Length: 139
Image 1: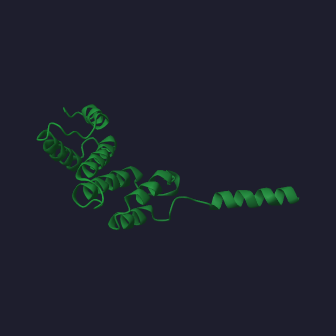
Image 2 (image 1 turned 90 degrees about the vertical axis):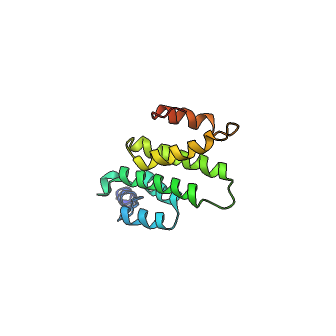
């Protein structure tokens, strides 16, 4: 009986411990408005699609896009411009992995890479260029 009771309590505890907030969309939008992108992405990565009606893929796309825009235009002041642009490109690549037709991400990539093209000694890094080429860009 004691074993059954402990098993029941353990099962209850596991089933009640849920990493998916009740309203994923609201929570993610709140975190985006607070520029807390890594927290928003953590919630989305850990969310159980069976426990929410939210479109997790669309929310990830939105979060990555907003994170990229933040890094590109307002990013952490302690970061160098190159670090911010490289990090922004990484976020835009994630957007395009989710939605290859996202025009805003494509436009921002073209803008950043256009700037890099004026500075032949500078590059966002080989890995990023390879990923961009795999997504249909030609750099």
